[in-house]
Length: 510
Image (cartoon, rainbow, N blue to C red; front, side, top):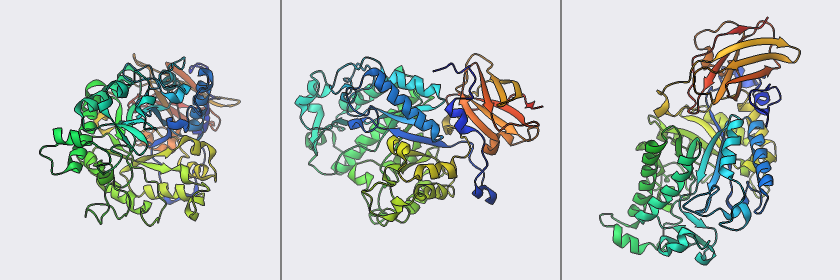
């Protein structure tokens, strides 16, 4: 990939972020957000997204990953959530668990390179954030421990694992298991330059005794009214302790979870949502609402994989419910969007064959200021865009570039040094804008602003003035093909926590 110091005219990220006319709804006074999570999940379990099949060469796997980054850039996203520990295995050389079978087809086999190291580096080259996605307890998609690698912790510690539903799981009720899982995940966090630690929605696989943890309940369950309360406490401990470890070892990264979208139904609990679906509190022993209220997460991204008006679980009722949960807390709220359902022939209702359905979700989100973005599942559906539902959402809502949100606990930290705008010169292919970093640390990104006149108060809080977000370096040149004589340019440095510097000096194009 060419150096980021070179001319960025051809860089897809910059091209995608170029200023374009605002859509019709802007006439109603809508101001797009300057900060917004725009992410997508890249799944590795059973080779859903990456790698597309086991046994590809290292070069093939690298090429596939770069193509996923191209998708993220083309859809004007700013973050990817990449599954690097799908089944108690690893996409990096882990001292705790074996290499993932989804890399080579054989668990424990070295793929010939470091997939996590490669992915993080290439993601950052595009100016995108990398959130490392872990499944905390799932050990295998099949139920025979003998099929695990001989050195797998589940083979060495057979009492740690339990079968259920044709799969194997670590037993969350064992303190040594909880610590081991944390150690295994924190190894990636501490050794790699990731931007976030992310859990999905899998905790306990059932609320029945068919998941046979009776021995552990007898040993550790004293003082709890029932098995369910004890199990919930085990998951609570995992969540709370992960927060403590992140804060102690790498406080600048984001820590969050994307749970299933229903905490409890109102028919079960008066403070639950007006829904009638599977309840994470009861079925998975995951007190997702409690985690937000207790301040254990930087963000929560409930998977609201239902259409507006869906009878058992209506998107338009869950959005205000979750907004109310997050209101007044320091937990950011992002929404998991079901790109995988749009245009899927298996979906028989007309709503999922309406190209505007997902865009309607984002329109509805605008009425709830607690929501600061969305994550799309999954990458293949974002790419394929079967009925142009993704294109519709992007055209309606991602017209302007957006910086990722700043975590509330990091908002008061030291901002990056103010950069210098070396020049803004009009040439045949547009206005060439040259940003130069100052200070010791190079910015993660540069945000480039174009104004019709000199900067006024609030100009750099208004996304209508933001024309590009480009990868940072010591110095970067970007070309604005829409620039014209009389425009005023400024640049702002952005650090890895998404904090911004004071704006640079300005240049008027002559």
